[in-house]
Image (cartoon, rainbow, N blue to C red; front, side, top):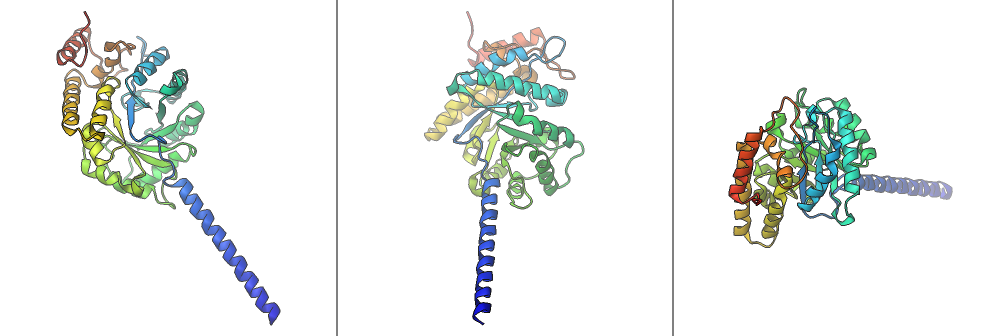
Length: 346
C-alpha cells in the first residue's frame, strides 16, 4: 500500500512537472512569437521614406544614384527607408532587380555615418505568393531589417481570415524579420478593417508570429484609432496624410516624400509639446505641397523632388508611367518656389 501510494505521488509529481514545463514552454513561445517583434525597436516615432527607383535612359535600374539618395534622405530626418513599395514601382521590377536594389541600399546605408543609419523596410509582397515567398526568404541575406508584405491583389483573399493565412505563408519565409502588412486599399483593392486583421494576426495559434504592424495608407482614422490599440498598443502603424490626425489616432510613424520630412519632424515636435496650432499650420502647409505634387503629375512629379533639392536625378519612370516633360518640370519648380517650399537659387 505504501509502495502504491508512493508510486501515485511520484507519477502525480511527474505529471505536474511535465504539465508545468509544457505550460511554461508554451507561454514562452507565445511571448517570443507574438507581440514581441516591436519594430523599429527603441523608436517612439518613425519617419518613413518610400524611395523611388532611379533609371537610366534605357530604363535599366541606375544603382549608382543610391548613395547620394541615401545621404539626402537621412539629412532630411528619415530613420526608415521603405524600399520597393508602389513609389518604387515594384510591379515594374523583376524580383532580381528588387533584391539587387535591397543589396545596393544596404551598402549605401552601411556607408553612412553610424549615427545616421536608417532601418530598411523591404517590400517582399507580390501578386504571386511564390514570388513573395522567394523575396521574403532572401530579404535578410540581402540586408533587410524588416519585411513589408502586400496582399496578392488580382487573385485576392476573400476574407480577413484568408488574408492572415496568406500573409503568414509569406512571413514564415523570413522568420527572423519583423513583418509589416501593407494596407493600401485605394491602389490594391484589398480592404479589410485593420483592427480585425491585427487581432487575428496576433492569435498565438493561427496568426502571424512575426507581425509587428501595418503600413496604413488609408484616411480612415476611426479604424486607425482602433488598430493602434490592438495587442496592448504594441503594434506599429505608419500612416500618410493626414499625418497629424494619425499622430492623434496612435500612429507611430509618418510616410511622406524625402524632402517634406523636415516639416514633418517640426510638426511632430509641435504635437509632442502640445503646440497644436503650430502643428495644424504645418499640416496645412504639407497638404498644400501634396496637392501641388498631385496637380503636376503625382508620383511622376514627386520623383523630381530629390533633384530639385540638390540631390540625385532619378530619371523617367518605367512605362507605362509617364514622367514630366522639361516644360512641366520647369512649371512645377516655379510653383514650388512660389510657396517658399523650394528655395529660389540666385
